[in-house]
Structure formats: structure tokens, C-alpha cells
Length: 165
Image (tube, rainbow, N blue to C red; front, side):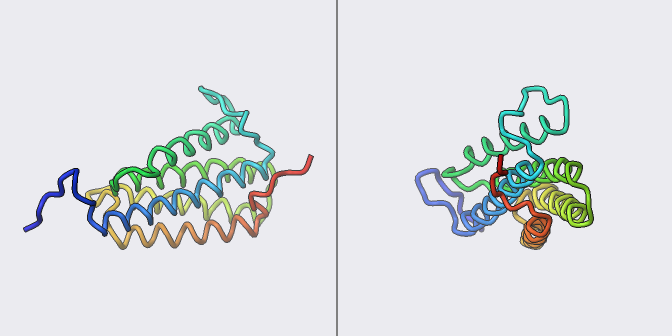
């Protein structure tokens, strides 16, 4: 029988570990999104409240992802919310990867785009269903696909370095 956790008690260690894992993946995906936007020449000021084009959609997604990450940082662990944050960041990275691939088409960017889409799908699976961020197998799969997306993004040149002007 499990004992309910009161708000004045520390959260269970496993929920803190899950939060750390989900938010690390969210930060990684966010960084990939920023790097892909930079590679595509998309500046943060391209964000629009109602985005009308690919660049505006990518910039707006990055802005919203940053806000979501800031909201979850320092909060009490909530595996469902933390996994959703990671899912949204991965979707942001996929949107940015589409823009970066369109900007510089090629085999490396196509591979990076496919890896970003797979990472987004895996993050969605980890956040969804009955487990809501608590399934270790789905979380591990999301972590693995995120690591692959990071590696392929680097090979595509989406390193996060600011574009020279």
C-alpha cells in the first residue's frame, strides 16, 4: 500500500529522477531547435503570435518551448507535465529541422530531419497513454532517439553557433 505524499513532504526520489530525465531531454531538444533555426537564418524576432510561414512557425515554437521549460524548472516533479514539456520541445526541434532542411537541402540535413521526427514521435509516446511520463521503457527510448537526433544535427552543421553576418 502506498502512502500519499503531502505537500509538506519531499517528493519521491523516483519522480525527481523522472523529472530530471524528462527536462534534460527537453533542454536538449530545445537546444537542437535553436541550433537548427540559426542554421536556417531564423532569428528569434521572427516569432509571430499567429505564425504565417515556416520561419515564423519555427521561431514561435522555440519561444513557446523556452517558456514551457522555464515554467517546469524548479517545480515539484510531475512526470506527466515534465514529459509533455519534453514532447513539446521535441516537436519544436522537428519544426525547426524542417525549416533548416528546406534552407539547406542535402543528405545530412535530410538525415537530421528524419532523426528529429523520430525523436518527436518517441517523446510523444513517452508522454502519452496511461503511463503519462512514468514508463521507463518509453522514456529510455525517447532518450535514445534524442541522443541520435543530437548527433545527426551536429553532422548536419546545426551546432548552435551563431551565424556570421
